[in-house]
Image (tube, rainbow, N blue to C red; front, side, top):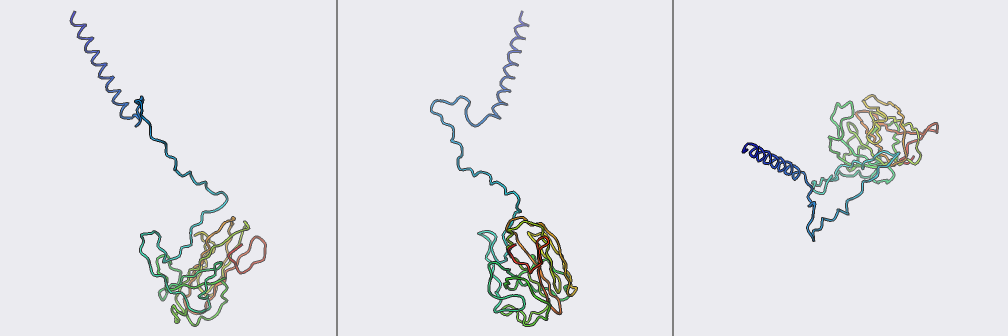
Length: 246
């Protein structure tokens, strides 16, 4: 008669152990609030200052800020000395900033350069401004007053401007330059006219939506004459020297 008694005890102990193990497993995944709170217990209030997701704009492209060198990218970044601004005027521009025009960073490139280098890896030696880019083919003299008055060869300029598009449509951009030039909108190449090929011109199409885009023109001068003209048109409209508002 003891055998059944022992079996019942063993089975009861086994069932109790299983019950404890299951309870332990549930406790590992339990919430931080008690299932049966004691009187006076209050759960933490839900967060109320969580910002709502920002809705994404439709029909426009994401635009970053103009990439001006010399501006710290964070509050703790070391402050860099800004390059000098050109004094007076020259073939390419002046010392007067135009809020609706172009800002140019001047770079010195090595002798023998035949294509635009990666200007992101270079440090600008000066700054100049222009309302439009309309430099006809001509000899370069006088350099860049206040920056390098003898710099007539082997330099590059990165021009940037906000391109405000009020009229969505298919546009064509044309650049004529001596020597190389590359036109970008929002970091996308629209016209590639790079190279030390003398006076050349090329065009490229792009569909622009209503937005403020970033227009960038990289220009290279090696030797001889200089030229840089930027044209644009919408659809079948007449071509014109490209403004910064379309």
